Image (cartoon, rainbow, N blue to C red; front, side, top):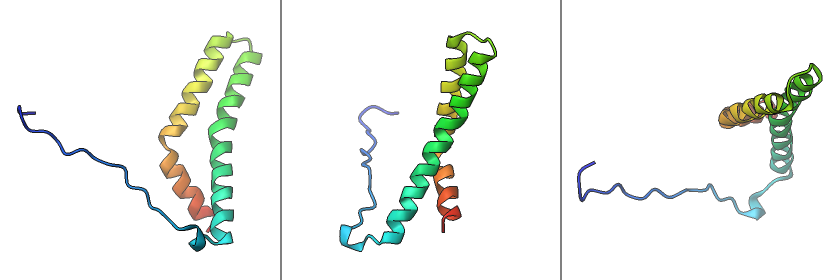
Length: 89
């Protein structure tokens, strides 16, 4: 980057929706999507952690693999949320 030239500061833009425009269908869909995401992000890593620990692996190794899988799935959270939103349409 050349001296004296700065990139414009980017701001976050939120899609604001008024509370009086919220429908019960939208609230129910968002509750199901967030519940599904919570299950997808927590159960597979927890299963791997418990399975590896019970199989005799060191607790640090089991925790490292579990956290690694958890954060790897978090990297795809937008795609997972979009897929779950389509599923509940």
